Image 1 (cartoon, one colour):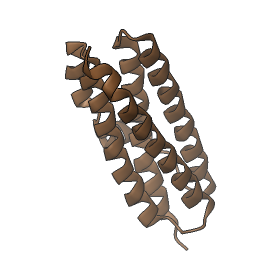
Image 2 (cartoon, rainbow, N blue to C red):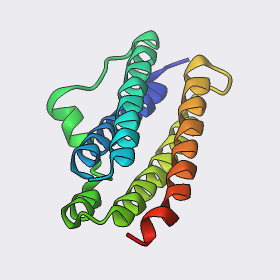
Image 3 (cartoon, one colour):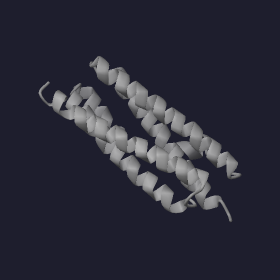
Image 4 (cartoon, helix red, strand yellow):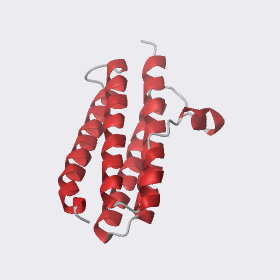
Length: 150
């Protein structure tokens, strides 16, 4: 089977992971709460690790990892709204933007799964990453009430 479709799907996810990694890193640097700093640093590292898993999959399928201008052009700035939330230093708004960004990521993961061979290592890896993103959303949603009063 031609792996071009799978390679493209994985490269697209890789762009999203880099975007989320950067968004979480920026959030960790800008929030005041020590707990949120730690949480966002953890999620930034998670996305960094996701990216490396995806790179390995792309290479194993005989593809090339998108880099440089082509790669930068593909990065969809899902996290751009996070900038305004960070500027306001409103932790509730920041958490809401994280949830929004993660829900957007889930859509991309589902799109990628549609292009991957069910049962393959790539498919299973993407399912695992998607499930971890679902956990992030749940965890952040559970934090919202604690920051709604601040």
